[in-house]
Length: 159
Image 1 (cartoon, rainbow, N blue to C red):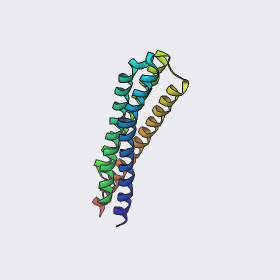
Image 2: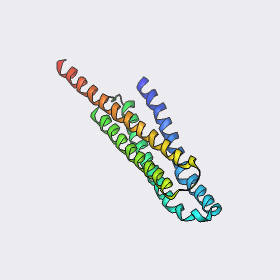
Image 3: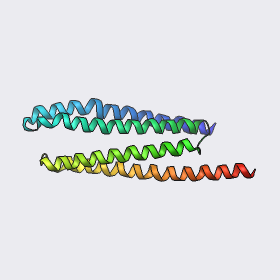
Image 4: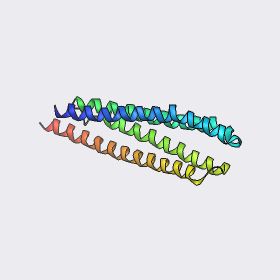
């Protein structure tokens, strides 16, 4: 019963994160880009490339949350230490590493065209670092789950 309760709360967090991602990347960002393009006409040409980059990052984040929800479902079935969870954590790490790369490219792009206040590229840099940190944590957790799977298989063989 405890596993199901934990799984339910983890799923709720994941669904809230998914709703937040959809809002930020696919509702707020396009409206904000349109506002910026209208206000800063000399930068209007950046609207669609910036949105394409943001949407790509948003899709990577959403895919990561889907893998997270799959892990949560397995936890609810009392399958915490299975190879599928280790694989999904590795996929989350890869997706987040891709997102970090896109944020880094966006940061370099902002610096290259030399636009806006420093807060824009600093924000992109912070997002790249946060995505990289999440990728590292997911990779390490995947390694730990993989090791736990091996230990659990060894215990099953000795019994």
